[in-house]
Length: 216
Ligand code: B1M
Image: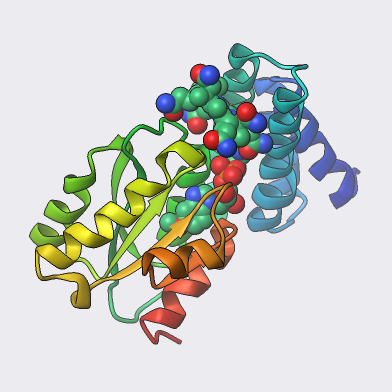
C-alpha cells in the first residue's frame, strides 16, 4: 500500500504531467486509504498547480499545457471535495467572490470559493473579469456580509480600490467586509486601498473572514 506522501506526490505529479486518469486513480486510492481530503487538495493538487505555474514562468510550459494541468486539478477536486468535512450549524454567512475586471485568471479564486463553501459560507461566484460595479450591485441586492476580490495581475490591482470606492458611494461600505487576495497583493496594499483584510491563500482566507465577522 502507498504511503500518504507517495499518494500526495502522485496527485501533484499527475497535475504537472496533465494526466487526468492518474490524478483520478491517485485521488481514489488516497481516499480509500483514509487520508484527509483537505491535505490531498492542498499538498497534492494545489502543489502540482503551483509547480505547473513555475514551469510556465520558466517558459517550459505554454498556455495550453497550463490549462491541461488545471483540467487535471479539477478532476482531482471533483473526487476529493465531497470528502472535505462539512461544517454544521452556525449563522449562515453570505459572501461574493470574483476576479476583478480585466483579469481572466480564476484557478486560485475557485479554490478560495471551495474552501469558503466547505467552511459553511454561502458563496455567490461572480466568475472572472467581473465588471467593477457588479461587485457593488450584487453585494447590495444579495445583502452579503463580505466581498472577496481576486487578481493575479499588477495591471488589474487598481480595480479593487475602485470597487471599495464604489461601495462607499453606494453607502454600503460599512455593511460589508472586503477581503482581497492573489499573487501581486500584500497586506500593505490591502491597507493602502482600505480593504479589511488580505489573505495569501485559500485556507487563510476562511480564517480571515471568520475573524472579521467574529465567527468562532
Ligand atoms: Co497568467 N499570468 N496570464 N495565465 N499566469 C501570471 C499571473 C503571471 C504572474 C505570469 C508571469 O508572467 N510571470 C503574469 C502576471 C504578471 C503581473 O501582472 N505581475 C500573467 C500574465 C501576464 C498573463 C497574461 C496577460 C499572458 C498574456 O496573455 N500575455 C494572460 C492574462 C489575460 C487576462 O487575464 N486578461 C494570462 C493567461 C493565463 C492562462 C490563461 C494561461 C492561465 C490562467 C488559467 C485560469 O486561471 N483559468 C495562466 C496562469 C495559470 C498563470 C500562472 C502560471 C499560474 C496562476 C495559477 O493558477 N496559480 C501565473 C504565474 C504564477 O502565479 N506562478 C500567471 C495556481 C493558483 C492555485 O494560485 O492563483 O496564486 P493563485 O491563488 C492562490 C493565492 O494567490 C490566493 O489563494 C489561492 C490558493 O491558495 N488567492 C486568494 C487568490 N485569490 C484570492 C482571493 C482571496 C484570498 C486569497 O480573497 C478574496
